[in-house]
Length: 278
Image (tube, rainbow, N blue to C red):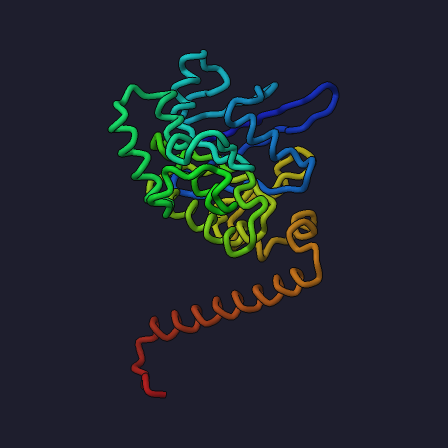
């Protein structure tokens, strides 16, 4: 779990993050959304220690990351996996050596042990047998999966994903979203995703925060976002007429489901017998 309490970050006289608090639970995909300049990228960089907030607390399982000394921060960073926007693979290294890189950095395992772990995570992201390929030989989706394999090779407790679907077609984006979701549930990771992709929001948004001009403007789930009455959020999410219509249709569909569920509850709670053939 990551808990953020009242963090603030300024650059010069400009406030980028203004008194933001949020709790991100393990086993959930926690999404940060917002338009360019909303502060979401700075917020994520504060979480991983690339920026130091001017005020507030960032607690990793109750320990304040901001107040830790160097060795303590290093221990937390060992528990963090990062999927970068452009995958950030080393072009001169094979898939195998790219994924093995964190093991070389942070463990004293033998080569055989490291290779075994590399093969396990490559198999997990459906890239078995791709060890000797170079990044130039991979599609965009395969590069993302190599990036995910590298991010989880150390069995992290926390996974950060910066625009994981950037540059991918919709079908491949869906594959990546579902893989991130599966890994989050399987390993009980606290996953934090910075994204513009509304398909990701609706597909894996267990917990969503919407940033606007440095403030946490809205917080909820992918189910609740459909019924949001926050004008700023709705303008951002459902900007086009097509998406507005899709929102209205989805609201009608979900409202109908709620009514059907209520009718079923009424039937199940009714002591009088009824004819199921009717």
